[in-house]
Image 1: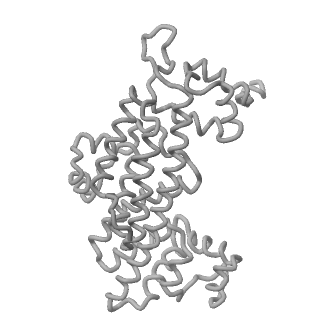
Image 2 (image 1 turned 60 degrees about the horizontal axis):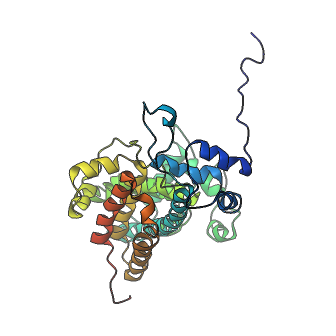
Image 3 (image 1 turned 30 degrees about the vertical axis):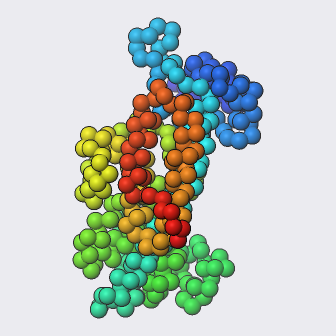
Length: 336
């Protein structure tokens, strides 16, 4: 065997000046935006990978279609640019909502602990740290995560009171401090143990919903596109009954629920919209987020609605979320 047989030929990196001609080969048009302006956008505002990720929301000519087979039917570069801007603004709103969900989940845990006689604010934390320290598959994962934060001035104020030895098990950190030093994913795992230990059955049913929100948090925090591949059916699991009831109240039928929630991103955004109103108790925060959602959804998203006249997928996704927003995110005239 030739020693070069296993060498994989890498794709050549394309220059920005080569990208527009390449997109034209795929029948992506430059009628609503000039080729020079598109090139400037790719060079100065966004990268090719992000912008073109939205092309999967548009139809191609099916087989048999002769020379057009596999090419896009109705796609202008301006549509991709528009979706990129919408996606960016959506991520800002979603990140704000998820941060609020995280904050009020911590408040919910602290308030619940006060009602449990056997809980002193240390017991459940020690249980969680014990389980983490001795985990068979990934021991001390949370410990390691905490140790990485010791050098931070903010966290050092907390850790200075404890014996930080990476060979020892952490213990006796009060829950009100512990909640401030763990990640959102760790918080969800802690909440799962907490609700199981104290038989909080109704609260425990939120764990699956929160885990999906956690996935979305990771995506928006890393500026990953959330509006690409909206047609993909990659989540076959049935939704929680709370979500089913929530969507029924929004007058979203069973077939639409099944179709839309089969897409992971649509499901994650749906769960975020649901959980925000379930857990956030501040009228001021709810009002501000509701304003942001309405400005985005009934303002920027439909600014170029004519771009999507022939796109049944994107129109159906918009209609789906429109029903949720009109039912649960009403803009009140009296500002809080």
